[in-house]
Length: 77
Image 1: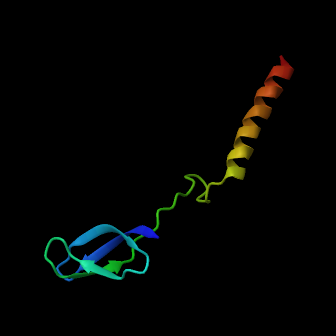
Image 2: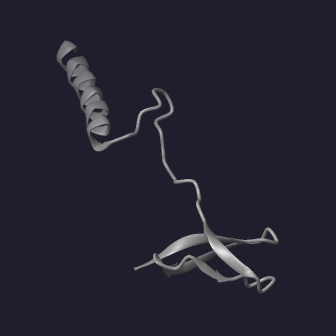
Image 3: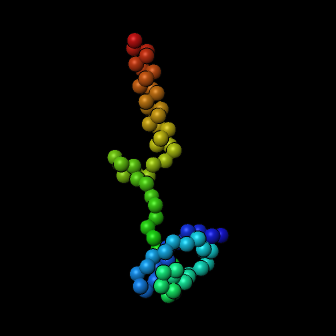
């Protein structure tokens, strides 16, 4: 399976390439030296207020709370 990986050479060049997950090194396209696979930070998203991971259940509870408020306002009028 091919995945997008970062590769870094000794000269400091960083290259992204689609490679098999078993590939540990490539030839640097800029200098021709060997570039090894580098670890990159994962792309995660945290909720802004609580710092929790957002999920479908959290989204559902927010939408449900808004609907309940709207229904309560309609019942009062």
